Length: 360
Image (tube, rainbow, N blue to C red; front, side, top):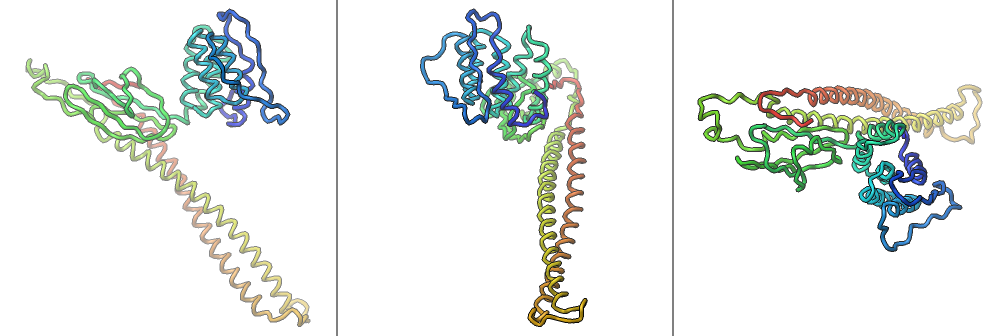
């Protein structure tokens, strides 16, 4: 699987491969293959497996996954392969689950399954590069949450959209969207809302969420020694990063809108230009400039002259508007690229100091 493969082709590859993989030798019973018919073949009638008693063995769940994948129920197939792996861990079950998740349009679960497959001790070397390439292709569809906190005052509880996470969970791959962050420790609690776009990586700075610790409670004040200051990124560094991210997103959106408007204006210029040429030919035919003799049945040249001038003016105006839109779109596109590079530099600029822990 390569990163450049389209979504529809990737789904076909997944469905075909699912019917070829077999469990590892640790599964006692032999596998009876159920080859999936080629997708798009109208002569092949694939029915979803009938709902009966659930399998009780790893092989049974693996077979159920093959059947569900053949019926193009990829989400259920992935769940069946994971159930098979729970009973009897096999690399093929994990890899099939990753294929099925990817075909089902669930990139986060697909990456997690690929990573679990790569963590296996005994895996097929040719499949390693394939899984790594698939992960690289899926990561731009996801976002990454990272964590910054003071090692002297770490959070005792950290909730993301109501789900509790430990500091060891970071960096955390997530689907793009809005996230409600809640954190607390012995000194108090705090919360904030973050919005992440696809491909974005953003750090949760717990130090800015939680109240400042009471200086009297620090052991350094009892000994008369000053605690070293936490150096690290400034409090407003993340705000700047968020502003750059939002600005880049807006500029990219404006660029695409500008491209659409420029294209629409180009079509309008073509239409009015053709109408102008048509009216000019009619006007020349009526006024007889070339031959000097006129066919009086052609009528009054006045309406043709008015139509010619009207369409000529519209063509010139649209041409000017299109040129302006093209220049503006170019400027917006270049600005989006510049802001994107600036955002990447800002995201990569991390200064570690005393007492600062950064989960990257």
